Length: 386
Image 1 (tube, rainbow, N blue to C red):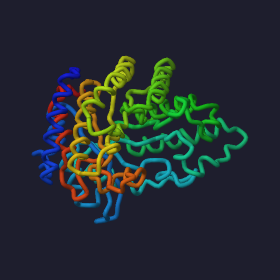
Image 2 (image 1 turned 135 degrees about the vertical axis):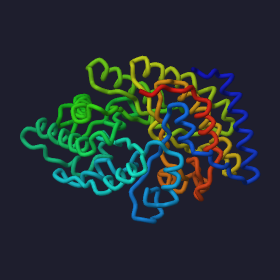
Image 3 (image 1 turned 180 degrees about the vertical axis):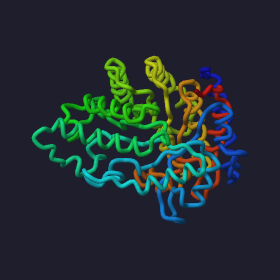
Image 4 (image 1 turned 30 degrees about the horizontal axis):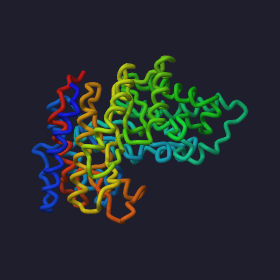
């Protein structure tokens, strides 16, 4: 069902007041009995998170860190590698793969009965391709050489992991938000253009992993300034559909950014355009996946109580809208604990206060954001998983 604006804002007001009160008392909310996945599973949804490789006991967001692993096994029903399956990590040279780290990760996940998503088979931006790929000599027949390089990469990964991976982000972030065009890479120039490259990636993935959900993943979002990015993604999805490219779902990264303390007003201003975007995507027959949810606590005071309350309310409002779409079955967080979030290093706050983008704090205690996620899952309409 779709949650009305009036109902959604009423729920947000209650959540913000509750979260703020808990923060003022400097209390942590207890984790839900059975964890977030237990709530998600009761609605036919999977709740998951990214995880990393690490040496045993290292202070990382890794399966080998007992403190972090405990969060994963408690709250998650699906996992995704944060970096270890990307070209830069997996493909040190044109002729060599290094699967050691991801092999260890997927083995641990399997031992704990946790399915794993594949992220990603092609991050189509020059700065995120390996340096060797951007400087690669494609020889006298560049199109043939580039095609073989892409075929080898996607086929090697998909065949190695077989049915252990049921969903892949085949292409990641191919749309330039500055002008809604497709990024060009050395690979796409050799192949004759970005459209041909992206189409080929999905066709290869379908042949190599016919069982898997194939996802186009991007960070277009609902905040102001994203309209052009969303338009570019819609054009790309329309083109895939028209050309018969085997794309099953849109990955909505969901690195959302708070707009200020008055969360109800900001959500009311954002939800209309965002719903029109999601309606356009789903009307084409695409499923939705939340692939990388976290919250940048921008335009919020440093005070932890007020900040956590606003982040929780913003998270709840966003998830209520996303989960109103029955095409969304999987929700993955981009990190369980603030301690390991990428946002701290990528975009620190100007006031030097540490970012608080995840459901658990740096000491692995559940925050109001955790309660917001639990509440949104509880309120979601049940799914019937195939």
